[in-house]
Amino acid sequence: MKDKIGVVVMILVALLTSSIPAFPHHGTAVAYDGSKTVTMKGTVTEFVFKNPHIQLRFDVKDEKGNVVNWTAECGGVYFWSALGFRRDSLKPGDQITISVHPSRIGAPLGELAVLEMPNGKPVAKMGLNAPVQ
Amino acid sequence: MRMRLVGPIALLVAVLISPGMSLAQGGRRNAAPSPTANLPFDPHDLHGYWDRSNGGARGMSSRPGVDVPPMTPEGQKLFNASKPGYGPRAVAPAVGNDIVGECNPQGIPRIIFFPRPVEFIQLPDKLVQVYDWHRVYREIWTDGRQLPKDPDLKRWYGYSVGHWEGNTFVVDSNGFDERTWLDMYGYPHSDEMVLQERYTRTDHDTIKLQIIVTDPKIYTKPWVSETKTFSAVQKATITRDGWFGLLEEICAPIDEVVDFNTRVRNPAAGVK
Image (cartoon, rainbow over all chains, first blue to last red; front, side):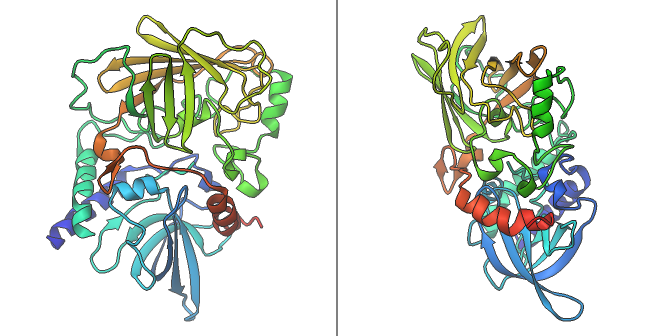
């Protein structure tokens, strides 16, 4: 069952990443560089499951071994909950692989592009198809 | 968790790979026809849950700046002064002046453009629209009253009356607070704006809407919107934990301003 879910999820991600254009005039374009994607392995520190923007915070070790706390800006609860996510779907300590469109000024902030949940849990692309206000 | 996600994800995949599916610029979807679209319907019955996520762009026009009537000098001045967070003139919230960025009311027609469900409750004397986004309650009176001539109290969501012209429900509104914008791209209006919305149910699952802004202080001729499309919301789309109905998507300053803008959006753009 788990494998089947994995296949479905990978198809989903492939479709989403290949066919959905970024919102070309999305407000986050001021803050984030949609032409760049940074992928990181991190440890969840906080999952703020609130409207109108979900925030996901996670620690990432940089190349020097320093831990940097990142925040990914996400869409609203409406889309996440429609996919079955709940406020406890991510807990502090969970290991994730996450891709974001990074802050244009290099701050450890980004707009979520792809999230890979820990331990075989689903992968979701929640940034582009989850418009904010 | 895993089991809970199987259904929705499979559904999403099915939707995505269906032949009628495509995504146009701006994230709009031209979805395949609904299986219930051919059911019989009463064109004068608008009640139910509707969503225009897939039915048009998020502004008056198909793209910002398209089909905008020439502005008056006053209109141009206000447009130049508006600093939206979206579109080609976008700036970060801290240096912009979009009052919605701090969770102030969106007004009409802006809230109509946001891709979330709205419930139409049709009563003998009025049609009520309840917008999921910001949980806005709007009354459109159908009891024969006229719009107020010069309402003392301007309203964020104006004063509205509705009547039928054939199979089109025509809503006329006035008395708007001039601090709202027509859409998220910063197009202004005055407190003398008169708005007309024309809703036509074209099949069981579809309502078409056109909006006409008449505001001679700001625009030299009426601004006719792109035609927007509402689709019937399937029950499962707005059911969470077995609880069916509108969600509560309130933009609370304590979450959006104190937390999100301060911690995320502004610093991401390099604005303190």
